[in-house]
Structure formats: structure tokens, C-alpha cells
Length: 489
Image (cartoon, rainbow, N blue to C red):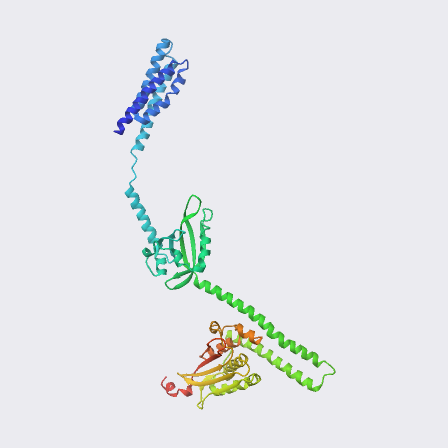
């Protein structure tokens, strides 16, 4: 039906071309100009009605020109004008055939099958899902408002669910509350000029909150250039963030240690300097000299202990300390430690209770180093207990171990400080405030390393500030206490 109407249209254009040809031929113009204006109607007739309409338009136009010219001139016309007219006929026929061929090629082009397009899209989506589901990274497509359009297996496994269950949910539900404003601000920066943004935030997974690095890529924008769809790929960076935090904490402690070291060194050095000036006075008496010398010796001993602790810690950290282990009785170690710390305990008028029992407490260890450990615990108890307080030392055999406990009624420990108490350069801020100084923060770190080198453990306990503290040292029993076990080993 459509072809029939197209043919009719082509013939109408052909006869219109003939009428136009007759009018052009009647003008007092050279024939080539008249025929030039008829090329377009011929092409149009061929495009609408096909090659037949184009040939008809060409022939009709040529006949009309011929008739009009013959009627007007009757003679002298068959020269050059006849040749031009013949060329027009050839051009019109060629143009009609070419236009019709192009028309037919377009008409017979294969039609697009909507079902085929949908099938191709479905297969493309399946290939995409197969690729991203094998990735270890978390992948999701989403609207910036929060709706999840697609999630891969990695994302679903992190959440402890399935990809299908995540579609339609809001990813904002999985971002830590404190991180949401920053994430939203960064997503707003997705523009055609900046189509990719990286974001680090805490992400709630089935295993708890994890730090995640997301690479967000914009997929579509609205007319105003605002992102309306994006894809994000995430990797777990919790280990990296914890390592960075550990480095920052270590750097902070190092800075605090250097500040405290300067303070701890300056005080005895100032006292020694003052003592030297006093000794240089010509009028100083003998009794004053004795007092100044005693003061200078105490400060020199303090400096010596500081330097020895630093050297010991360095040597132990490098594995250069050799323990001279031998069978010993931990009761003797405790007695030696008490003797070392008794001046400090007496100066602060503390009540000391030692309960070690009548039976030997055998262990294998370095007598001097273990005395150093127990002495450090007693020294801390004396320092961080108000004058007139109580310090209790007990020792006994418990579960194949010699257990030494040092309890005091002192300042106590904040719960958040107990875990890090044995770390290098760690100090309890409340203790420094109450004593005006808390040492270098290496005594307990040194004690832990020495105890570990003996195959034992050391731990701290406290019910909080104002409730005192307890330090527990556990060491393996010496062979003398386990003859039966040794014989059967």
C-alpha cells in the first residue's frame, strides 16, 4: 500500500517537472540553464516513486522542452541545444537509477528486534556480574542518595548476606555515623570534570567495623552535572590504618620520653652543679661538706640507674643480654629486692608485709635480673602510694609456677592504662601529676622483657584510680620442685 502511494507521488512530481520544463523552455534563456533547474525534480521523483518515476520525470521534461522550443523557433534549433538536451536525458536516467538504488538499500535494511536487544543486554549484564563476582574487592553500583543497585559477592560476603538481599538497601546504613558527613561531602564532588573520588571510612561488616578504601567512579549525570549513579570498589585497609596509628602512638611516646628524659636528667644535674658550687666555698664547714657529698651521691646514683636502665633496655631489645641462670629460691630474690627498696619504703612510712611461706620456691633464673624485676615493682609501689600506705608481697607455688604478687593501697590504675602499661615509654598521666614526675616509663617495659626471657609472664591489675594496684609475676617452677615430672620427661 505504501509502495503504491509512493509511485503515485513520484509520477505527480514527474508531471510537475514536465510543466516546469515547459515554463523554463519558454523563457528567453539558453537551454542549459533551463534544464539545470529540472535536475532536482528528477532526483525527488526517483526518491519518492522509484526509478520509473525518475525516468518519467526525465522524459517528460525533455519532451516538454523539445515541444516548446520547436513551437517557438521551428528552425535552427537542432544544433547545440539538441546535444544539451540529450546530455540531460542521460544524467536524469543515471540519477534516477542511483537514487532508487540508495532508496532500496535503506528500505531493505534489517529491522531492529527489541527482543534481541534485550537479550544482548541481559547477556552483557550476566558477563559483567560473572567478572565482578570473582573479584576479592567489594563492588557496588548505587545512587548517591543511598540506594544500592548492584552488589557483588565480595560486598555481600563482607556484610554476611547475599547480593540480592542488598539490592534496594541504603549503603548509608553500613557507614559509621561519625564518617557519614565526610563521605557525603566527597561524593558531592563527583562531577564530569572529576569523575573519580577515593574515600576512606569505617564500614560495618559481619566481622565488625573495618576501615575501607573506596574508589568511586561516576557512571551517569543529570542535566545540571550532578552525579545520579556511581560504582564503588572497596578494599580492607584496617591493618594499614592500625599500623599508621601504632606509628603515631610510638612517635608520641618517643616525644614524651625525650621530654621526660630531659627533665629527669636536668634535676640531678642541677643538684650536682649546686653541690659543686657549695664545695668550692672557702667557708664551708665539715658537716656541710658531709651533707653535700651525701646529696651529690644520691643524685649520682639516680643518674647511674637511669643510664643503666636505658642500656639494659637497649641490650635486651637487641638480644645482647645473657642471662646467668641457675637454680634459686624466689624467697631469696624477694629478700634482696626488699633490702634494696627499704630506704624508699621507710622514707614514705609505708607498712610492708612479706608472706613467702616456709617452703622453698625453686626457680631457674638470673638472680640479679629477677631481683631487679621485683625491686622495680616494690619501688613503684612505694612511689605511687600515699605516705603511710600499705605494701604486701606474697609468693607461692600455683599450677606448676612460682607466683609473686606485689599489692599496694596506692593511686591505682585507670582501666584504659592497664593494657599499655608495659609498653615502651608508657606513663600514667595521673601518676605524674600527683608525684611531679614518674620516671622514664621504661622500668615496667624492662621488667616484662626480663620476665619473658625467663619463660614467665607479668601482668597488672587494678579496680581503678584510688583502689590500689597489683602486679603478678609468674615463673616456671625449678627442676627441684618437680623431680617426678623430670624423671618421666
